[in-house]
Image (cartoon, rainbow, N blue to C red; front, side, top):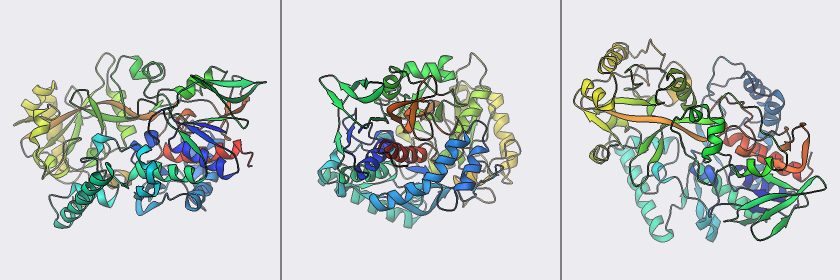
Length: 539
């Protein structure tokens, strides 16, 4: 069997098939294994034993989610967890989770099904560690990626807690030694830990993993996909090909075709690697595969700010928006959404609030206290200085809100009115306009020391700061039409023999919705497992 793509889906599929007795080759286009998974936060949404009925019921409460896919995912997820426990070093952090996002839907869990990967010692990979993709640089501190959960809280609180400072100093010292002796971080965290654990499992299972491989076409004989064509040779695969190339979010042509705001000339910046350029879609469509009906959201939208430099680098705003003392406004200076909402909902609010013909953009506004306490986007909190972010133009500072508005091209009267209205409720921990902090997922990303509402505090202390955010995505949701066995379908809804898809090459089973954190990686693992079993003829 051949697997194309070395992210979470492809590595899981290859390890599954190899452990079932198949000879497996994995071809990765990039020089490093890990794909977008290695750049991710490492959150996966996976129901466990005894939860399959409620999990499927929760998913099917969203309009457009196919019950057959929801049930298949819910049924296989506990088996996938057992597979990871038995055959990989991937583990999940205890007591670190996120609530599901929609409390009003039956099957909702307040403590959630979102799990984050525990740190992993990369030395288990030996010399192969150098082939594992490093974390995204703009999300690290000198190459160190703090683990989500408790460790991340230590890094945010370093200027306010001696315990946190001691932890951070120890981590930085250990990281310095890792860089000295290994040239990179060896303690793998978040998505890099997930990719590293799956990479090692695939190698241990006997998978042949070849990097720097670009596939030109699928080979189909007597109606069955039987291999691939590279620039200089063909590789035969009697059990077929699994597509797991990471979707098309780095392909500007396909983004224009499937992302409505890009079609309207809005700027867009993906957090995925450049290799996620739609190769799986291209290869499959060339032999008669079709894309699934366009989902409600064709990508995993996230607000990003742009870091100046030789080239603009996007920074995703995951958690800062929920911290107390920040608002988001449009050009008119007015708020448009609950800023503490999950990033997909934040972007949906921005798309809906932006009139045709206007740039899709917003400004995150905070005061000096907020920036020094939590940081704002790429700008770090105390004790790191704020000056470099101001001098580079990333942060806009001003002594008054009126001046800040003028500098940002925002209506001054609108901004001052928005802050006054927000502050009137914030002094009591309330947000009458948008209900910020009213849901468990809002509060999970807030500051528990801020009472009575961890997501709400007034904006009072000059200088004030602003950072511009524009549309981005973590990956694509639109993808190839498959059945619940991960078999790719043709125009007649018939499986194309020998061709499977998983991860972002397969249309998201979430139908363009975002029910919880980790709804890309969770299905990537599960349907990668299903694809490997299908290719091996395991029922």
